[in-house]
Amino acid sequence: MLKKEMICIVCPNSCRLSVWEEEGRIRVEGASCARGMAHGRNEFTHPVRMLTSTVRLEGARHRRLAVISSQEIPKEKIREALAALEGVTVSAPVRKGDIIVRNISGSGADIVASRTIPAAE
Amino acid sequence: MKKLDMDIAVIGAGPAGLAAALKARELGAEKVLILERDTEAGGILQQCIHDGFGLHRFGKRMAGTEYAQVFIDALEKTDITLLTDTMVLEITAQRTIYACSRQEGMMEIRCGAIILAMGCRERTAGQIQLMGYRPAGILTAGSVQRYINLEGYLPGSRAVILGSGDIGLIMARRMSLEGIKVEGVYEVMPHPGGLTRNIVQCLHDFDILLHLSSGVVKVHGKKRLEGVTVARLDENRTPIPGTEEYIECDLLVLAVGLIPENELSIGCGIEMDPKTKGPLLDEEFMTSVPGIFACGNVAVVFDLVDYVSDSAETAARGAVRFLWEGILEPLQYVKTVPSGNINLIVPQRIRRGGEKTVSFYLRVKKPDKKVVLEVQEKDRVRESRRFAFVAPPEMIAFKAAASGSGDVILDMKEGSHA
Image (cartoon, rainbow over all chains, first blue to last red; front, side, top):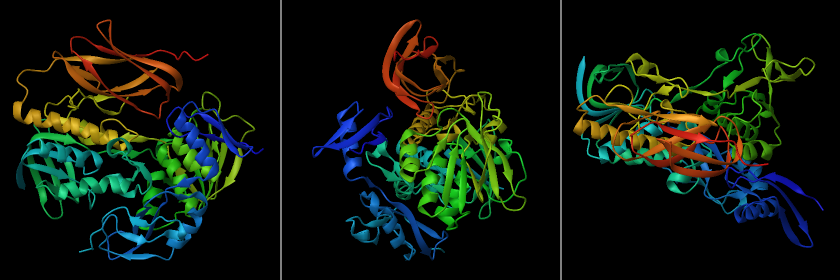
């Protein structure tokens, strides 16, 4: 039985959770609310994270464009998704929400611009 | 010298300045001007590419850049004037601003009201008494953030982070994702400086250790940083002999606190609060100089941008009211008094007389559990609120009624946990 220890981040109370699998069920100990229980279960079974990074930008004052995933992606795909962004170059102008990479690393999430950048004068 | 007349001038186009200008215009101020020294609006949010902004205000987790863009887009739909690349040199108590820029030259701007929104800056190496040489490779967390996120440079390959403030934690994750090895985070205090969720998401996720009651006691290397010596510290922050450890690194990241940027405020004679390092404010976020208001991180360092925007709108409401009604007789104030575990309060004072709802922002001195916060006025408890958990990095924001008939005491006694 492998217990996973974690700190709940649902609220500032910061409960210390122990999560483990027992007879096919996920058990959460230490949570003081239902949302904390759910958080513990999700972190144990399929942890997901938002991905925020930058891509190369041309034709603008800045050299990088800030990007964000359209939804959370599986934690284990983060490295692969970042590597896929390495070779991407975008030209200004860019509008916030423009899709930069569709369905990054097969995660179902798009990578979109998180700000608007006008073309350099 | 170019002369301008404005209803309201806002200094700074970061999140506070943008929200203040938009609210002032919405409430009917006609000639609204924002003065910004950077080349674009958005302030520090333009380098905050991570998510977690806007949860209170927009009900979703946005990147800092996305949060700023909402306000920048709104600004473009108004007739508010934004002057970028413009440096404000001086403000007078008679509400005249002297500023200059390459495009406009020198400007004298007479204002109905002024809203200060200059934000804050990071404490630097010079302010924390680091022993050793001053090699390249010692940077504040915000500088590292700017290099990586805006300019596209990696400023090192192995980093030690001193201080556990939120920007340092955010950069621990960012550097890890970009391939910089983070050797550890060292915090001189016995408790973390940043929010718990940042410690979990930025350190635990990347197996980075947070060393409390520990600090950097020496930096090594003459031209380029070669390493640092860290040590455990006793309760007087003196290094404990025998606990020193050498860590090879080419980047020392400082996340050792933020200081409101108040040179302009002090220059025009605004009274300051030594605790917040911001102006002494009333419930409309007006400073001690009538008609000059302050909001955002120049007023007090907030931990959520949502609160920054809220404070800006409070200041804007006050500024517009001042513009229309003025202040007929000298204001009289009652004080807000911290008691028990309360460390600082904004606003520091409340106008005498008249029942009103006040937005309070507080920080506690030390972490505690199961506590009650009481708002007391003339020995009467006006309001009491329970908190399961409080800690210095987590600002407490709430609204409460006050009558302005006597000092308001905000008291938090020790928690009832056994």
